[in-house]
Image 1 (spheres, one colour):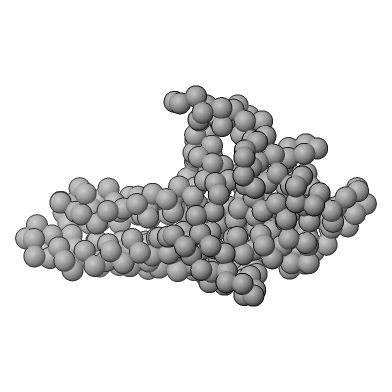
Image 2 (spheres, helix red, strand yellow):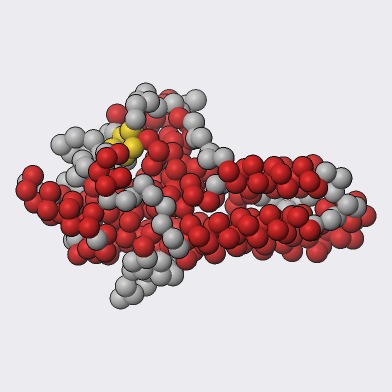
Length: 334
């Protein structure tokens, strides 16, 4: 491991990361923290999107198809739904104007308590916090960029189901169809357990300077329920109030209807497709259409209003919460 990488991971473990851009990370007056399960859900979400979007539809045999199917199926609907919200919260915490706005709104204990209770009662009120529009637009663009990459991979995989049929082996019946379906169902029931290195990678990805443009000037951000809950989660973390009990009280640890239901339906459609699939090329079709394309649409619906997209380590702390990266806001009016 390179020295620079080791240094980044060590700083992330303490909750402090000082960089040279406006995305540099730090938390003045104490580290922002999120419960372990929230950060691990965000990591599971990020892992799925990154790995599934990287699937290359160059299938040489049934084993290559099976490996790609496992990659595209390794997600649990409930965890993926929670993870999208948690990942979006990490993105929001990289916006200096939002960090500064939350701190100003909760400048003293009484104000902080009032803000926390208001957000817990109605996450929609987070839109009134200074900097919320900028953070919401950042979430819109980041999540939509991920959904688009996943959708494009799904389109390529689905097309390969047609292109590959000129190869005789692809028309042969899958010999272990029942076992393949059983594995898909098992992967849907098992939450992903990220490693410490996975979490460190999550923080690096979330804190990286955006590789996309925001919404066109004058376009309002999309405040979907996912975005509202993500901003509320981020605000509680910035205020040092995102402990397990507080988030449970606010209902932020429970998966809500909407994208979560959409993901469950995508999973059920995948299983139904695999149940009637016969030859290898039909497995490829099921993967492209349901595991990738349909799932990407669910993620896009939760992401909010379309935005213009320019381009498509071990942690020392293993307690019940994680120190998370947060934008350095001292030059953003704080």
